[in-house]
Image (cartoon, rainbow, N blue to C red):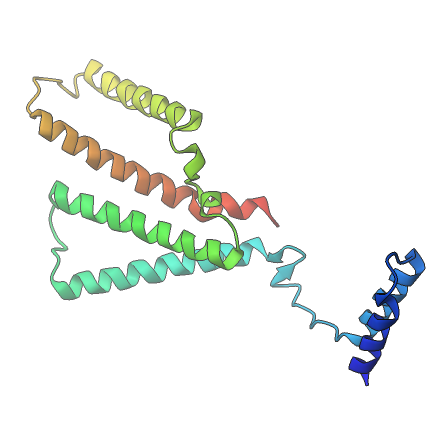
Length: 197
């Protein structure tokens, strides 16, 4: 019966090229009466923008915690060393895995929230933009000041360069990976969450 009424309403207005405002409101009112109302959402979990920010942040942290737990369990089963000081190559692998986990969880959250992955802390459009170079400058100044002060008070000696060019670039890559992992893990999900209540 409702479908026939909807078809008859549509046919009655098909021949007219322009509808008056009252006719359009009449059609909208008839369709609203025919169509079922959507189920209401729980206000504790949802607001007018979707899932609330606190729940999104909780989901992200749970994803990260579960991922790291599973990776730690797999590493112990594969016999990865858990004691002593790890060599630089092992630390590099740890940092790359850490970055992959937090970035992967941010990608999952971007799909859940229907947002761009760039909203989570690494926008591709700003990859080598102003903020990148400003961060690079502050990082170099900060570490130079720290090492300079330690050296000035006799706690550090610069000595001579003990690495080859290849070794210097290797350590540079190592520190770049550590920086990416550290910065993205601090800013990924929390970068987008406060933007919406």
